[in-house]
Length: 244
Image 1: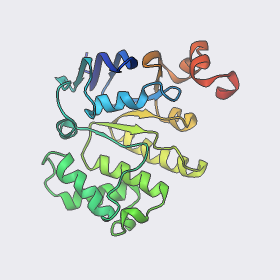
Image 2: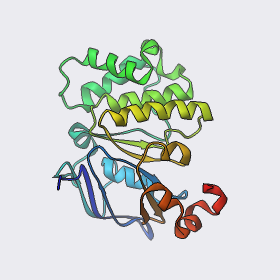
Image 3: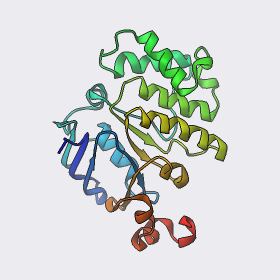
């Protein structure tokens, strides 16, 4: 059996009496696409922050590609091939689109890229932003900023790409457009872990859903089976019509 690309065991995090990650176990196979859902405050973004190394865990372990990374900081994890996007895009607004992607290629990839300029052009073409390469990032539309988030993460040459509500705030057509790009990224072999409230976008890509509620893992399995669970409906979806 191959080593999981990501393996989390007993991950715990608390802020005083508030438990935001309660002994979470999670394993991802290389090449898998997994979605994470749950109500607001369920601990989804905290889990991402723990995996990415932005906050330190109180207990448990995280392994990436067979290597323990629990004590590594975010820059080291990124250089190993773990990259993420943010719910609210955070580009360097006064830098060009190209320069934003170049930052990822130069610093996030850990020196693995021999021809950064060529690599960045290829990433921008793949994401659909090559014609915007010389525009200031601060002038982009929301959809373009979401695409830039993807491009900056892909510039790091990730083995695991973590997406935090990347479809949030987009129109129906914009979300569908972005989903096609994510499908192509996954088809190229990149493992994806994706937090999303736009369920139809999420289930069109992922083959597995993980449900969090109050810091605990409530469900884990095939999307339709998870969404049909009475526990999940009660904790997250609220009613049957939400997934009809």
